[in-house]
Image (cartoon, rainbow, N blue to C red; front, side, top):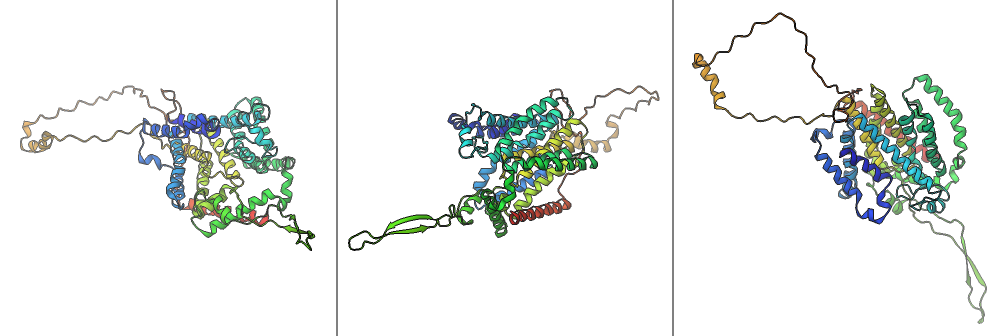
Length: 523
């Protein structure tokens, strides 16, 4: 039940059936899935103990991140209600993905659901449009492809959501498999969908993700050759994509300047308060005290009749009225920006620390078979695509963030052998016995009254052949029930966040802030 509830979380996030009709919405599927998660946690065969929640560095830093999100908010109780679902998703993720087969099935479902929204978006342009996405694409988005669901109704959000599917399909279908033609045919769909979104940030993110994934785990010489080849060919291809020429004149681009305004205000909020403005308060604070804007700098001409002269209408008076500057609505347009503005320096530090823990696990893990290596590479590609997209879209507390951290934490548990195969028996109290208490005293007083121990049998010097004993091998293979047993297959030695890790996270956070400032100054 735990694995099924985890898949239902993915379905609710991507396909969002609660938004397809009012009937499904009234059933409250999100609450039903949350209830299933709670039931599955308490009905696990291995049980659930306190130490199961804090076994890896990911667990410690994620729960610290959750705690800081609640603590830093001016309304902690409301924030707790808002994020309690994501906390449940993280717990069920690390508890349910206990084996390599489960991780592989989970990632396969993930890739399949991304392909589901790709197909829905493309079909909306060819007559099959149950969500009314075509009107959204041609109207508000001005021809840029979008899907009329709450988190994909913007071309940029749809584009960034489908980027992880490229490396996922590659490693699931092509890597060390002979299905190259099928893989190439399938990948045409997300590439075409990405192209129709005309998202500049998504093009850049996809380029960086593919380049990073292709070099991951290869010899240094091969990495250098791949980077040179991608730099030579990829730059030309990137400039030929739609709307990429706008990057050559960013100062006069209203969309880019709007993002710069959001980044500037986010930096200001982080510098003003070490706790930030609180989760979910960025938009309200920007509207209340953000920069001013004039939507139409051209003055409007208004004509008034002049005062009457000798009973006759006077000459007309022309007056030019300029629009008054006003505050306006603006989203964070960046996860690093939103973390810093809403959670302050500590929140940004913890967020960067979460990404660091995932990457350290995937960089230092020593896999022993192809399936483990496949999982490692897929998780790495998801983390990289998310980390790059965070500069361009606000994926703050998205379900995908929680689930890939949970999957990486579960993979870490598997490699470190931290998963309990079965419930450990509790110690039973020994019943009190007067006979056992008095037996030592009687033996000293009346030694002959007690039976003497039998003489030991003579030791035979004859060597007999050893009997074979069946010992289960905990290597991630399947058990009698058809499900993989727990236990380490590859290895990883990292168990706790140390001082060196904290120093590296601090350096990475400093680098994020420096690049954040560079973007504000340069664009």
